[in-house]
Image (cartoon, rainbow, N blue to C red):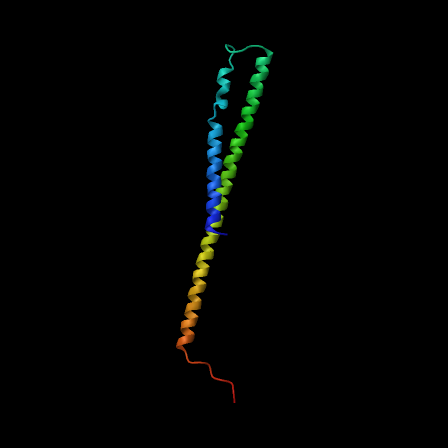
Length: 116
């Protein structure tokens, strides 16, 4: 897991939030303001108004889903970032320990030979 993968998930989350914002603010989400009795009356008008309300509810659900997915992507990015940091720290510790062992081996006398 890398920092680049975490950044990718964060970009995706930002894109989803932008898309949700655009959907929320599209002119079609305010059409109900024009569905008054002054505009149109009768059974067809009521059916159209109901269809509009149904479509807008679907859009609101999609907006909520995008927000949820963006939140999950951010949490996944947090997890990836934390894992990458832990891996980086472990590599640093391992490298330091290897360097310490090399220094200790260079500074100590060779082990006695077992030849007779």
